[in-house]
Image (cartoon, rainbow, N blue to C red; front, top):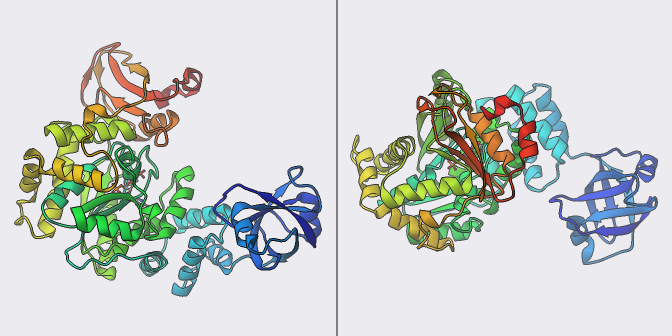
Length: 489
Ligand SMILES: O=P(O)(O)OC[C@H]1O[C@H](OP(=O)(O)O)[C@H](O)[C@@H]1O
Ligand SMILES: O=c1cc[nH]c(=O)[nH]1
């Protein structure tokens, strides 16, 4: 079928075309099917439908495909139905509970990286692995494929240290303390992070309050060699590029399937050439890991996967039933973390957790004797070396190194939630705190989030502030009032 081209200058991140449903019917294609578009070159694209935006006889070409055809532009293209990529069948195989071969997984990851799969297919893959999981072999192949389809860092000197959290506990800003402490002790830590997956602010969302986080792999290497550490967004680097594409689909589903979590974390560590890795596993009700037994199993899986990939991995099962510190949401969390670095003072839950993890890395990296890491981490915080290093990191990434926690602006519109009666806070529902922070606009609205005045176990007085939440735009009380009361308390 010949169709007249109508360019649509919208980036959708994939090769996509939009057909009028009459033409689609005639061609016998459905939404999500593939068509071969032939001008002077041929491109295979995913089909979208419209009743009215594109008239019969026309075809809408989104930015990416338009770019591809641009050099030899043509007004008329030839369209014919094409096969779905082989990976779509592989996803189906996974959905049917069948095991996948290494080449199948590699092909699938390659198609993810090359944007050959639709969001529906990606969502099906993630949902299927959420339900069926993967074997240890499949997870290793998935991780290796994620490493091999991107760029890898190679440093002339080692050891390369790294830290990662599986996430799931709100307010987990500890990388902002751990990375500078490790780097301040002479170790290299090229830390890449994701943006929020199930939370209201991933480490990259936080760091972006202070400095750019989008760099190429070469820049990550150069900056790490210069100042010892970085805190960058993995999604921008082409380091394990499949990871971010999967996380983008996980975010709206609010799922983080076991095998994907293992591969996502370990691919990022493998690709930066990490020798020693500490993984934080927040555990407890309302986290990704409900209890210590599950936490131990995940720790074993991470350590085993590390062994298969040649990395020395240690895990810390940390308390996750209540937020870390008293802030949730990018700017609020950065303010809290910077205050700790500047004054040495702050919530115990934040300081102790950061020191334990930094201490483990200092021991693994051989700069602290066994059992002495925690002390060295605390000393690095108290003597200002951690702050000085953090400022170097901010500067090398293009931020303002003189920034103080007092300069961090948070959303100016605030709503207070007060305690309905005198008493104690018995339980803290992590997921609800995250829901509120996301509703307020976090992580994209950097100033949005939740400030926790009273944490679990603390006494509250009737009508005293219990939670504040804030955002840049005016608080939408109507929306808030529509929220069921149990989300608020
Ligand atoms: O949104 P949820 O699922 O809670 O957690 C995701 C966060 O956890 C990890 O943090 P880090 O990189 O170890 O600091 C990820 O990189 C990401 O920033
Ligand atoms: O980086 C991360 C962290 C948690 N879960 C993931 O899938 N990736």
